[in-house]
Length: 263
Ligand SMILES: *[C@@H]1O[C@H](CO)[C@@H](O)[C@H](O)[C@H]1NC(C)=O
Image (cartoon, protein in one colour):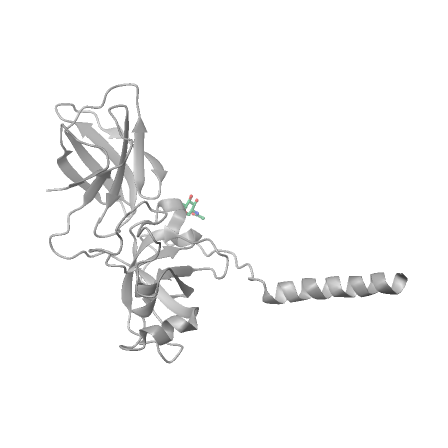
């Protein structure tokens, strides 16, 4: 009896040992990457998710609330940031140069990715869980699949200003469920810092800016007993303090689940 229970104890201890040896080590997240941290290259780990040549999640969305991230201007060059990069949604839309030099399939050339999603797996201080497209784009030409088969690689990254192809407009998506007492706006394709820290709206003919609150991801909302009447001018502030304004961008007869582009 005694010997069988000590065998059990040994087996149990061995299982704990194996578990910790093979389990994911928990690495605390690094400090937030802000718009002003500079242009220093930092170390990170990168993994990928979704299909090898797709943009990430099945619905081409993610924790920022963007949809169609497989289409321009993101074109699948997207990924999840961990806590100091995703920043509870504040990091949505921010842009990073990333590159890898090992394994052999890495090109070492920087590519730009956009943060569209969240990943909190504690595998590194900084972690980019990229779309198959973005991960593969760090490879030498023709070696994309070879690099993807490595699964996880050490990379270097730095924050850069977002640049979108000419003609890309800052876009305000009025979210599903919005109505005259509840307006939720998703703001996307903001050049420069890329991430938005404040959104205000102003009804036509009024002088008062109304501040929206952070909802989730890149979505800002307001709930109000007063009826909101369009057209609305929208003002947004980026993390570095730059303000942009889209005059009367949301028309009088606006509809939910519709995108409006700044002129
Ligand atoms: C990092 O950013 C998030 C989101 O803005 C914020 O809530 C958190 O306090 C920041 N952490 C530090 C250490 O500044």
